[in-house]
Structure formats: structure tokens, C-alpha cells
Amino acid sequence: MPEEFEQPMEEQFSAPSPYEPDEHWTGTRLDLNPLQDAVETVRTQMQKVIIGQYDLIDQLLVALFAGGHVLIEGVPGIAKTLIAKMLARSLKLEFSRLQFTPDLMPSDVLGTTVFNMKESDFSFVPGPIFAQLVLIDEINRAPAKTQSALFEVMEEHQATVDGVTYPLGDLFFVIATQNPIEQEGTYRLPEAQLDRFFFMLKADYPNLDEEKAILHRFASDFESRVQEEVQPVLSVEDILKYRSLIEKIYIRRDLLSYIAEVVHKTREHPDLFLGASPRASLTVMKAAKALAGLNGRDFVTPDDIREVTYLALQHRIILTPEREMEGLQVEQVVAEILEQIEVPR
Image (cartoon, rainbow, N blue to C red; front, side):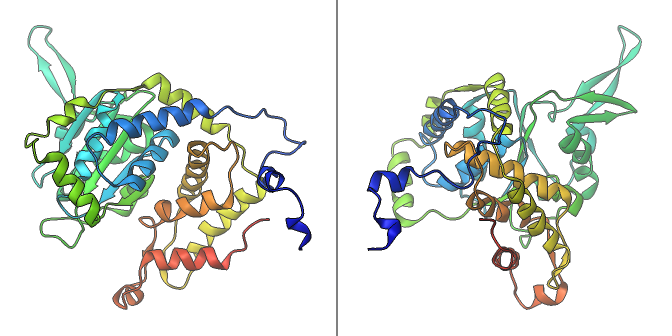
């Protein structure tokens, strides 16, 4: 019998991971049970209405606890907006919704300065972007002028109107939905704006069993009254507390180098016209920590990194025109890069 199988079964599974903090680490081990309980509570609330889309829900929670914005792409009718609304209902946050249309102006998003007749002075009336969780529905149906209004607010959590800067607060989370860009009446988002999204998530059709379950759930609920059963379970303070906890999750130096190598490889890959920015490296690192935390580990593994790399890079890199015409997919290039770079042991 091989030597590695001679130890008792309990010892095999209790052996420490090579990616755990060692004796040279100066921090303390983290209790992630409260975070896991909080995540499970939010999942439970959302699944009162949402059937399926389990990965999408978890990916949204990873972005929320890592402090990034999310873009969800998918064809109409597969619950993109509903998922965002149910997440908003399960959190004790100020919520607003923006429906992007071709005639929407930047002032409709940010707000405007108006003259106050009583005080004989100008005052600022905040737009719907001034909330803690903002749902932007069909974001790619508005033109570039309106899209540009989101640049500062998404990256710096502040908006400048008529030369005055207004902060948005400690927690600001954008969930945007978009239809595939091939559909009528859509605009391709600028690269600078796409780069400000933490993840781009793909929502897909439910499988047959899930679609049957959807029909059974709403057969006697045409008005979707079940949504009223979703209760807010996490506050701003809770989310910020768990973000601070995730920030303390341990990641080895060689795993940081691994992330840098993967992202750097996108800038010299022959099939790519545009590689990923340093913001992408930071996204992968933060997301890997959040994923580890949601899975109950206070240390990051290469599997965490590989799992979030697709979500963090697919909207930040652009194929060369020749390879795009040949039908190559961005996901294939990312997979090739991950295969080429040796995983730290």
C-alpha cells in the first residue's frame, strides 16, 4: 500500500493545507462562522422567490462582501432584475432603481442644481444614484453621454455636479443588468466603464426541473406576492464588518505573484487586442479572499483564484478582430492562460 494511504482516514482529511498560515504568520486565525451564517440567511431569503441561479447568487454575494460592482448579462426574462431586487429586499440598505433608456440624461442619474425661491439660493437635488444599493436596469440602452456620468461615481463613490463634489457614503453597490449587445437598441459599454465593474456575470436559462419548479411556485401567485415574504436580514454595519473580516484573510506571497502573472499574461497574449489592468489584479485578489471567506476558510487557495479569474477578466480583455471573427471566445483565452502558468505549490 502506498505510504500516503497508511495513515488513518481521519488524519488524511485533517492534514493542514499548504496554503494555511504558518508559524511565521503574525496574525490570528479568523472565526468565519458569523459570515457563513449571514450568507446562508441571505440565500434563504432570496430563494423564497428565486429558483435556480445558485452560482449567480453566490457570485453577487462575493462581490458585495469584496466591495465591487456587478454587471449581469443575459437575455430578457431570466430573472436578472428580479435577482437584484430580491438581494436588495434581503438587505437593510437604501435602494433605488434606474431604468436606462436612450433619452436618459446625466442629470437624471446624478441629480441637478435648482434655484430655491424661498432662500434665493441654489441647492442640489440628489439623483437616484445617491443610494446604498442601486439597480441599473438595461444599462446598455443608454448612450455614451449618460454612461460617462457613472465613471466617477462607480470608482470614487462621489459625484461632481456643477463643480461641487458630493460623497455617497461608505457603502455603495451597483448591480447593472444588460441584454446581449447583439440585440436591437443596445450600445456597447465603453472599456473604461466595463473596467469599473468587479464582475461580469452571465445569467442563463433554467434547466427543465427548475422551470417546472418555477411554474409550480407561481401557479397560484400571478402577482408574485411571495416577494413580500423576503425580509431584510443584513444591515450596512453587518456588511462593512464582514468586509473588514474578509480583508484579514491570509493569502501567500506566491499566490499574489500568481495573480500578477495571470493578469500580466493577458497584456502580451497574441490573441488579445487589450489586456487587463492592475484593477483586474486587485479584483481577483479581493474576490479570492471573499470566496475563501464564504467557504469558511481564512486562507486563499489557487482554486479560489482560478474560480474568480474568469468572472474578473472576461469583460476586461478584448480579442483581436481576426480571432473574434474566427469565433474564439474570451473564456477560452483565459483558460489557456491559466493552463500555461504553473500553480504555486
